[in-house]
Length: 177
Ligand SMILES: CC(C)(COP(=O)(O)OP(=O)(O)OC[C@H]1O[C@@H](n2cnc3c(N)ncnc32)[C@H](O)[C@@H]1OP(=O)(O)O)[C@@H](O)C(=O)NCCC(=O)NCCS
Image (cartoon, rainbow, N blue to C red; front, top):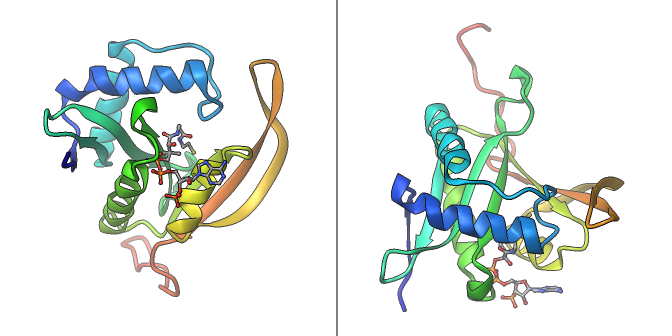
């Protein structure tokens, strides 16, 4: 089986919705308990496109999305404009084949191309697979917040990991300065 990473197109949204909804129903990766419909994913996709932010999919020979990754603004204040928070999800039957790290590797390149400085991952603290993959890609833990979430009747801890995309770079000179 060969895999290709490419930009998502609207035809990928049903597969993206299904992967997302599986994570809602069966994991602690997304702290929502409500599934979403296609219209919700279309609006999310449109918003990412409007910002010029990537939505990547990894597809098999049949061109079916087996996983996806994307980033958005970390916090909605202009001073955070060089920092993004990403998400990565792999279909439950496709995990353990290094599809997630491949998606993230490409996403990191895209974040650099968008002139971002820091990528943030907000990970449920017991999600050892995600923490492992992020460490392998150079992310370091920058904080852990106990019991800031709740799902399936349990308090959840949040671990922040971050990757400096261009260590040592000075802040860019921008028009207003
Ligand atoms: C996290 C996720 C994206 C990783 O993608 P993947 O394609 O399965 O990643 P990999 O194939 O590299 O496999 C996971 C790695 O974690 C390791 N791992 C799995 N469980 C582990 C555990 N309990 N402790 C330590 N390492 C663990 C595996 O051994 C493997 O590493 P290795 O290749 O060095 O042996 C995927 O599991 C996923 O979609 N999970 C559900 C959604 C999610 O958690 N998304 C991230 C939200 S922050």
